[in-house]
Image: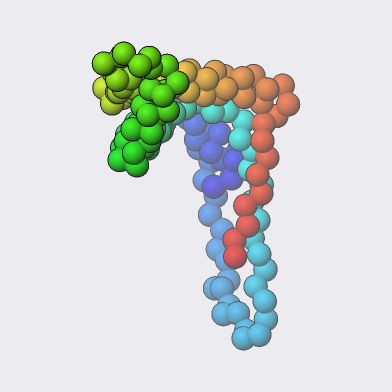
Length: 156
């Protein structure tokens, strides 16, 4: 169906024409087939579908972010970095009569890090979804003035 036929079908008026063509001949060996090409224009993007899709992708990115931070935090904790920090800071700020050692884990622990990570991931979901939806509106405005994006598809 051609583009005018699709537009007519959408408007409720359908014109159908049938043509009979000769049966397609088999291509001869060694003869290259002609590549078919189609030029399409992306003139509008539905903002609602962009919002739903970007929301799902940003949820997935948020989950990946939280898991990555947890893995990094676990590796840092098991590597002995916190004991090294405790020793260095304790040697710098401790006094000879001080009985309480410095512990970085009292200030930065897994619960605080994961809570901050979850908050950042939730904010990223909202911000990415809103920005991509706004970008779809802006694309629609630009496509109205400039005609949209033109894509050429070729069949191999």
